Length: 376
Ligand code: SF4
Image (cartoon, rainbow, N blue to C red; front, side, top):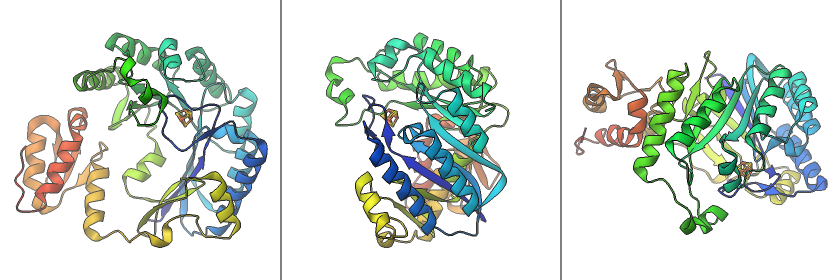
């Protein structure tokens, strides 16, 4: 494949959300942001590729916390250094209250064409209970400003399976979020991570059971589909064909290269990640490393691992995966049970299949080994 995706990790936030285990820091001064920006430019200058850049993604953390002008300069550096596809998708993640209309206009002007907004819920009580810094009306204002600035490809993140979240409250949230006219929704269930404030309070909270979580996922899928959203990946829904090209690169095993502390890469048949420490990242890029990562120690992916990855990642999407000879009977059985379709070479899951995707993937991979019988 002659395409590559680029990812920039901006690990700064206004404050840590109560459930967050991502690498991100709150209350970071301008001196560190400046040094980090310079380090990103340095890492960028070490990276050479002849491939066409099909997508660029600035994620975090909360990228606007680096400063809108620095983000714009980074994108300009990317544009001057690499060949970008004419329809290159350029996304920036934002949180409500971290970028205003003037900032949106600047982002749009320099070439950002997709916005991913951390809405999470339309229920202010729930937002406060998980330590988000914004209300739903802040999210509405943020999305309205994005529309005004000319963004027509806007995604909203939603979290379900949250403490105290009932089906009615979830449905109300989904409807309110859809009413903002976003063209993409990513929906994730809450992962209770050890060490987070939410984890520490877990005994005082009422979490949905596994059955409740599944019911909430079903509700999400049904409601979004009934409103014209295509369910094209386990957690992703879009309207008007606006699938996330960047995320599709991950699922189709297109190469991607990550810049910044804790950013991951899939490059030269290796998977590796940058050091998850802003100061060390700055120091290592100063030392002129091609990538401040475990690249040099990461093993090459074997053909068997590549095959399993292609199945695992492909089955996350409605485009599905090529199924090797040894697993075709299992694939046909999975399709006959109503979990998707199998045309003799490619298995694609539908929403019912996505619900049991871990089991499906496990069965397909297990059936590649002749001694394992399928349980489907
Ligand atoms: S805004 Fe995102 S990255 Fe930052 S603390 Fe909250 S969940 Fe984590």
